[in-house]
Image (cartoon, rainbow, N blue to C red):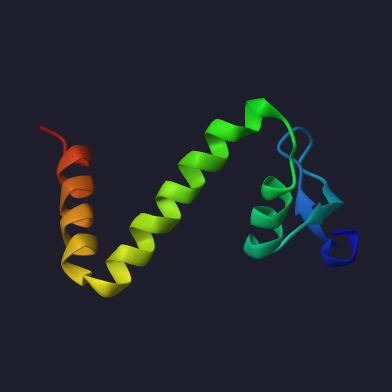
Length: 79
């Protein structure tokens, strides 16, 4: 896993200075989460799998994505 980690300079929220920070790609992050053996991580893994399934379903039925976007927009509107 460590061969996939790169360092980028990122600005600190505390002091505003740039520091080299370890980062991973999205694929790397998902692989890292997958490798966590803790029972506490299991609920997050299940949620992540559900989100992935929903996005894959949206690829095959774009109407699902449109409906999700509309629902999200409606939930954020100021009334």
